[in-house]
Image (cartoon, rainbow, N blue to C red; front, side):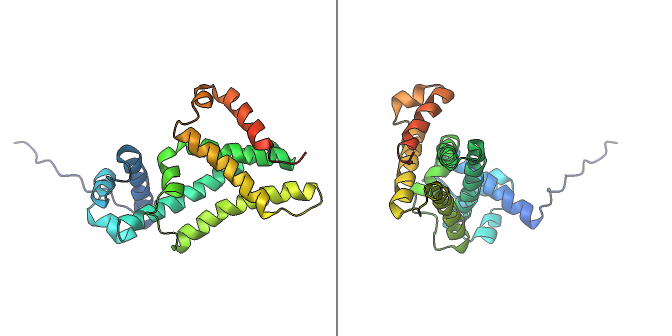
Length: 204
């Protein structure tokens, strides 16, 4: 007599584990299908959870995209900070490396980067997303402030806006394959050119 096989119980999730699993599934869905085809049902299927699970945690599709964008900004800040530390203690070098970290994040996470900076689906009225996005902006402000302090002055709004415009423009163009010559270079050669472009906005 053949023993009856027992169906394996579904993997239990703790609250935090389920949220993380849904965010990971949402990012994979965004990368594979794009924002136009993004849906809670597809995310639930990818995460192997009930169809109701994403709505229970995030409310609706835009709520999930808002949480994903907030998570993206937190990772973005950490990524920039790690690159910034490569610049050692010299403020100008740290600012340049932070800019390269900005671009590197965009190149490694193009779909997430577009969600964070180019989509109206995330709700920036969300305290979580607002706080995360402001942390990213304040990182640029702090890096510029350190450079300005080295020259005995305070940073101007123009300093910050110019830095942001340069690094974001480069990140956006490269992640969308619009800077053809730079995009074909090896990373080391590309980053040497990018450093020189970012440095043009930094006082000697």
